[in-house]
Image (tube, rainbow, N blue to C red):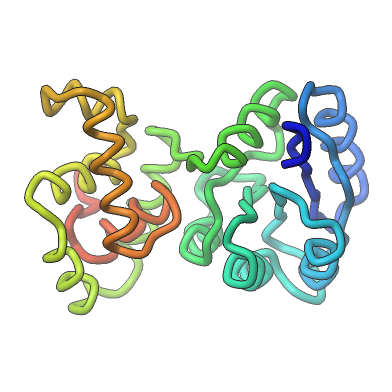
Length: 224
């Protein structure tokens, strides 16, 4: 980020959505929309040209969809954060986008304040993992996925018992403060555990950690 300003690229095939989000975000302090993209291929090209900090990515776009565009962008430039835009909170493609490297998702009817807060959260390196909607989404669509994969289960063995416990609570949508309260430890201790979990498992953020926890079978969807 330059001078503390968060640079945003908006990728959506609907002009009204792009313009609406541009107007909303440009009224927010410390946020600047540096460009717009009309599809996934355009988004990839604009990312290379404009070097944004955050990409607001629609899922369904012509030429190249948001999921594959997200995968290519986050693989090529891991520092760039992608926020997926969706009309429905239970959208089967959103789960695929999280697996592809998105740091969270946002409903298209979000208010200006919600939009700005989401951009700031992911730009700061955190994941937009709301306890309610995102947990329900991950649980619902991980249940439709294949059974737990053995290689992932083996990787969980690299974690300590406490780190495994923290990972399970992340997958349930708990914040660091809530995990600290649950485990009767300091919040800074939880932050340390989270950092070690991400490093050991080669994950980018809490959203990927939550997806991993479901896919390896550490947390099962039943009951959430």
